[in-house]
Length: 64
Image 1: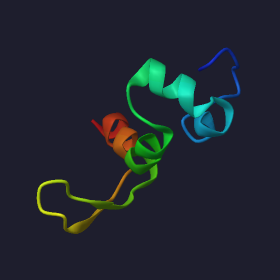
Image 2 (image 1 turned 180 degrees about the horizontal axis):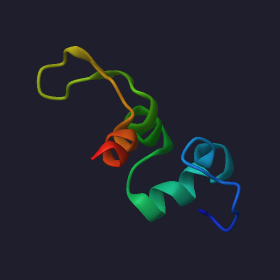
Image 3 (image 1 turned 90 degrees about the horizontal axis):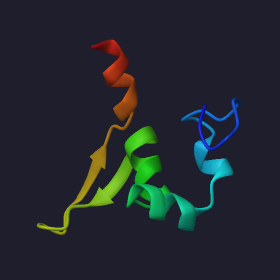
């Protein structure tokens, strides 16, 4: 359960909570959350190079 609703999951969390609230609570944006959860392309701040993150960050925790 997250954000006061038992139906909210990691898969649906970003559809429920406003970006501003998410940022205040977690210190990351919903876009950053989606990158960690789903993966995607991003720009490496040190090199300026486009890279890809595979995502599924929380899935690896359950595999232990």
